[in-house]
Length: 414
Image (cartoon, rainbow, N blue to C red; front, side, top):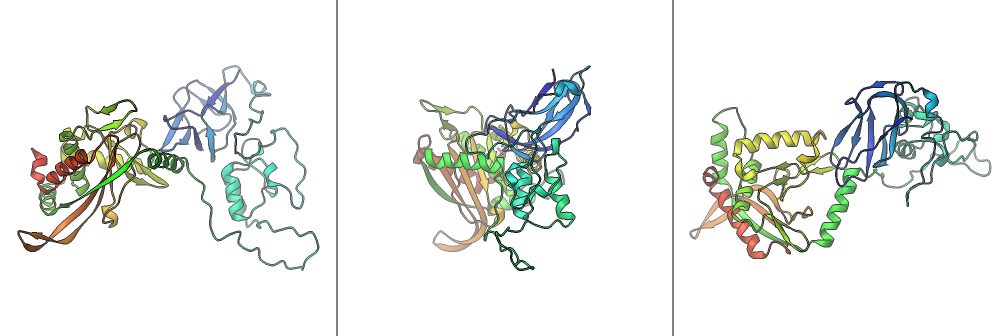
């Protein structure tokens, strides 16, 4: 009996994934531990390893297919001594469509009538990505020949058709028209972009946050001149590290949470869960959304260690190479948009956490000291709080401690 290779659940929030790429083809021999495919989850691109050894007998899901449910078979592996006859009748059944999904496609063995004017593309076997590309480019799927498993039309078939100059579909009129049809008008004044797994999960979680978490906001202005001078002095000492302002911010927030343990907590229904360690989730912008890799035990790490760790985490987050344990969990979040010139903003709490600090750009502003006007580099920081956990006084104490470390950076080194 052939072995099913299934779509794995690579994170607790994963319900479906995109089969981004097959690294094997039908007929290939594989051993336990070999990489079979790349799967896009809501956070990263992960690899699927073979658990058993055998030969790839049939690929059931073409690469580029999105929303493949967890635990669905994506390929069949033939064991030693089995041949293609063992695959007969397996994997040919069309699964029932989920609620709200497109109608099920015909079974692989079903015959399809020859294309006619106005033929229905919905009856053509094609991956969701291929269908989307065909809609956007005006191609009729019934005019194409698929190169995927069992004749399925996939992304490369659309690209090949466009490269060969295949004509887009034209509207069919019930009566004869002029010999030269008028150009097809644009469908609408917009372009539809497929919602990625990452964007879908972001939307669900942040909608949940604004619906269920009672947010309130506290803003404080921090003077940066002493911190900037220390950063320059430290960076001039050698090439072993190059500290960013964000490294100081992570360190200051971690130490402030250590001094304000009531804020280093989350709502857990009948209880408030206070964390024994300070683990900070740092928002990193990636293509299609954002990821929050975690600097764990941040209060126990020096600036150079935080800097090196954050550079590594951010780089691998943008490449989609983070392991689940590197972005799951975290007790508090930090989002810094200062590098984009944003002066101040209110961030949305990432559930189940109880707070997130939004950091704006450092800019020169007039300030009054001892009755005299001066110019200082000022950074506005806004704390979003879950009022079920962090009252106004707790949030104010956290921001006061954070501001103290930012404006007296030597205290971070003690």
